[in-house]
Image (cartoon, rainbow, N blue to C red; front, top):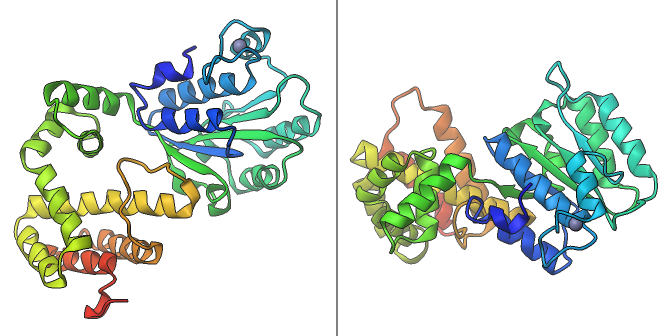
Length: 324
Ligand SMILES: [Zn+2]
């Protein structure tokens, strides 16, 4: 098992968030780790759980050798419960209830109990409701570490109670390191965005950067925040005239909107890829609605200029040509 800080290079976003919570004693009672890569989520949850129960923690890292760490590593720490899919690939309600009942017992060794849920999307509605009950009213200090690759498969009531932490896939973090090694001046945020857009393919990420990702990002930021509405419309017309640029612009906007909404919904400084835009959440929500609508039209002919226009105006609060 890795100590939490050893995961820093692979999870440059998640580890500082968790470390800050441990240092400041400001633990959220539930974390939702989103990742397409179960291995990454498992590593982070295991290391974080160890930091939570270790009795000889060094700063934020579990010592790895105390009684608590050894029990955790062997999978028999009395205060750590794990929910994983059964042989049918589901996490049944009975398993959730069993863990809930266990949580009702007093914490015997650690200051907090820990519940790890792997592949939370494998809970049906009833199982999710059972989990929700203990999320709402845990019996004593409990920290829930929930991982999913399909966040939308979880009830909104569960999602809204968790601090969301996006994990980089292995491929993405490798791509970020490779990009930063090749391009020392490259901004960390853009490196992460490029790697995510390219699903961790370093070559493809490099091409996206060479094709002017940074300029595009800058231009969108101006169109959203600083410039005039006329400037925003001009940007939409210009970017919309080139299919590739327009699609990349929409992808960038989508990332910004997602990050912004995550932050607005109490994710603290847990943004996903970059610094979320300073846009009021109702505008973000409007932009998200526009993006969803556009995605619904993806099989039809979509006028890219119009698509960019509507989402930029939503972000600016200029819906209908009037500031709102
Ligand atoms: Zn320890």
